[in-house]
Length: 130
Figure: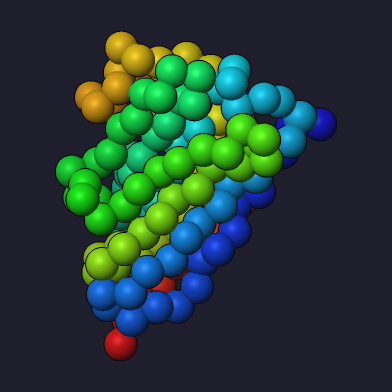
């Protein structure tokens, strides 16, 4: 059974840090790109970051460049999103998803899900507030 389990969300003050984890089961990270998405109340879903561990391709949205870092531990079949210098506008539910079509041709240009998402995980709430 394919599953994606996101965790690590919480309440943090502006300027603080959180690390989100996306644990995958039922498939290998070498076969899929994993993307992080977020959706704030009243806003459209935004592709935040994406990684394909097989070739090291990575994407970051402009809104998080320089603050967020995505990484992959294939041994643990887990993708991480290190979020630093958090801002109130980062408040959202964060989701991870698997995308078999995203590849190096989209690296740095388009988020995961550009051609569609194969699997979604449940979200984890991130709240940045003083």
